[in-house]
Length: 116
Image (cartoon, rainbow, N blue to C red; front, side):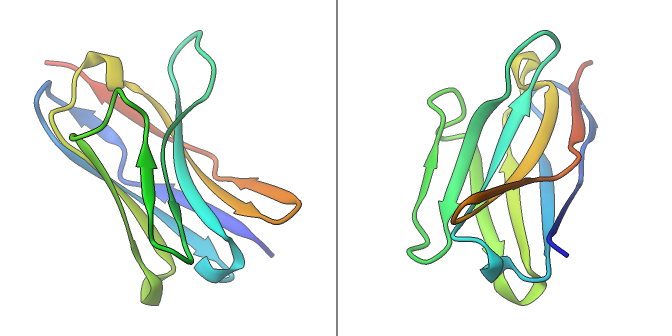
């Protein structure tokens, strides 16, 4: 059964950092790409960044470039989102996405709150 499970969300002060994890089952290689999206209150779900799992290339939303980094660990079937210099605009539910040819899969999301 294909499954994506996020973890690592929480409360962080402005300027702080968090690392989100997404564990894929049965395998990270079930997908051709994986990525992170976020949805703030009353907003649509937007792309944060994604990684092409065959090429290793990444791309990011302009709003997070230089602050967020996507990485992966094939042995752990995991993709990570390192978030630095967080601000109030980054507060949202973050969702892991996995793209298969013909199908999209989503995790249930993890909440990130940025507040002093």
